[in-house]
Image 1: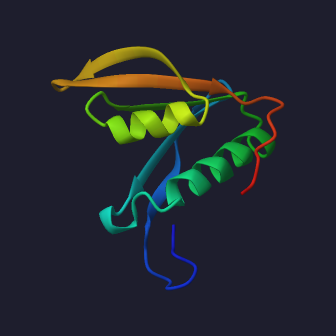
Image 2: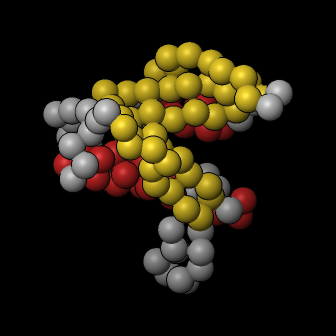
Length: 107
């Protein structure tokens, strides 16, 4: 992701895994660019792409249970907690949302 006005690298977003019609979303936004709408725009664009171009019916994500900002963001986008898992001493929260037939509202 690049800031349109400066050309500066903001972060990266996309899908880590595509299997069985489920796209697993991931994002990293550089600290100085956080809370400025880049995550929201990237999420909406990626979900729309998964639904229309990849024929996915569901988007999934996982984040540390300590990352309250990302948990709040993902649930504000309609994702629901579907489970938890442990990996290398970290508790991860698994989230998912059905997207088939969804129309993304552009801001």
